Length: 132
Image (cartoon, rainbow, N blue to C red; front, side, top):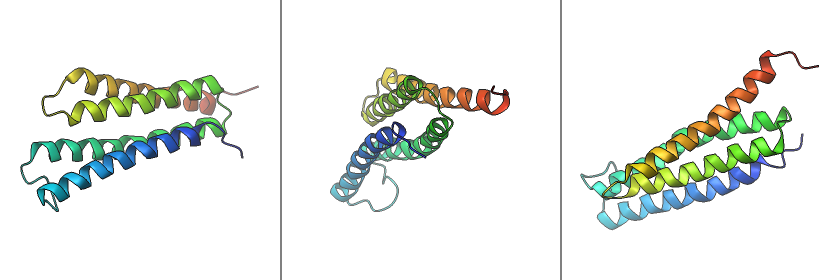
């Protein structure tokens, strides 16, 4: 089984995950907060950006990998992968700001949901509609 597209997006998303992780850990160290957010709004936002990423990306990558194994067209995978990557970056940026601009957060979630919906649509169509 050859997966030439999805692992590239997984690797780029892993870089973003590391950035979010290091940011959260750095803030914990700086403010000497080992668990929770200690009432620190910046740490709370950084931790939520990190956690939200962790909540959505694994499922999305698994769905996209399934799509690729079922021979989804490359352009579809690139649209979904790019949407996921940009969406997660926008969301992380938006939620991390002390004075939040909801446009980044909402756009990021919309792009994340678009990626997941593309994968769901492809998998449902190819899983339930007989292929000739």
